[in-house]
Length: 170
Image 1 (cartoon, helix red, strand yellow):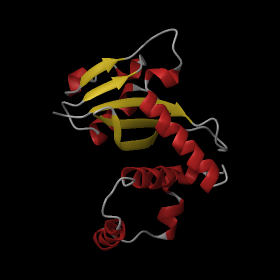
Image 2: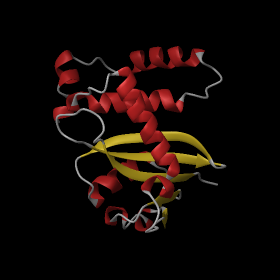
Image 3: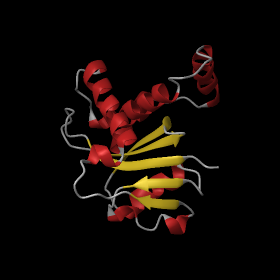
Image 4: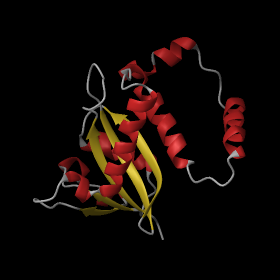
């Protein structure tokens, strides 16, 4: 059986950025517990952006719980089981609680680790690091973290300083 995922878009208005960013969040739910996450900055909340994230991050035939945002329409035709959670009298944090826990942890991590100051140019790297740390929080083989780091250093080609600092502008 495929895991269930909660997917939502957040706007990082509580963190110091010169410009706001939209971040899409997917949280894997196994037996009512949070599993792995995926985070990605998107340019807009259109179907194209959301469908691109979904296809690139989530296995087909998975069940996706979303709010009623129209950008999620059409997920059924992409091979996903789409369940919409929409209740007028509830707060957003009650609709997709796992997503909002991840968002709260992300904000707290940015405020604590980076003193709340995150460059939009580097936000993708911050999201990747948070995702890496979150997804390995329950790892029973902590030594594998360093092994995976070394493995990626060998397998992935070098990055120039110019590529690193200009990643967010692409």
